[in-house]
Length: 269
Image (tube, rainbow, N blue to C red; front, side, top):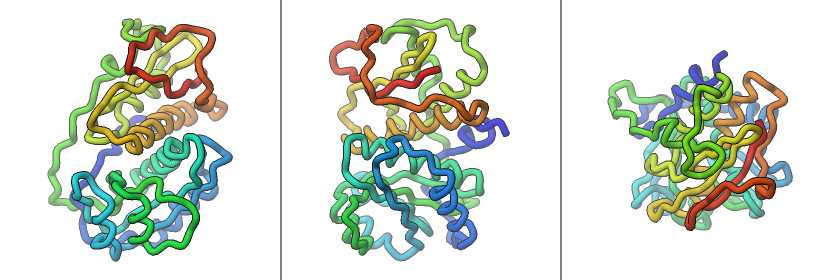
């Protein structure tokens, strides 16, 4: 399977769901994916996956949703997590894997902004010491839903060569790398603002964050996790020994980051 073309490229946010119930067999397949095939970004962080079917929207909308607007869907996926360094990036990474699995299973999904994680946990009625790290509405797309795909940045807009702001010769990229980078450009982000860039070097890529006053801190970190999973998944599909992302700082080269641009993570090529 061409993972980028067949899965990542087909993944688009949905704001109009049908009333069709998500079958128990599908939920079981998602849970099995999480338990058996889940690839954590940070292995040491403990997480829990919960599904909520059609009964939580009235309460959940009080603490989840952009500007108070929580997408109404037949089902919600919630990742609960221990609080530790990079736990939100880790939650975004795990949840993106699950939303791509949903795409493979014919489902649609939409990430929800969490305005108050404590209130969201109360609304969901969970007795756990873990926090609500991310919420994703999902189900089957309404066939009458003709919403247009939101535009996203091009690959050229998303990538620099060797240093921030420097052009790169894309003709030198091999096909798997190009697909991996296109998967980053296609990744979901808060309002599709995509406040990040990739610096491509001969032996590694570096993810850097751009200033953005509209994206909350939590959404910013979840965005990074989504981006990192998209790249890793495409590379892993053709090379199961693909390197993992690392939050270790870059010390062997100058990325040329201007003021306000922050280093996030790196991945060997």
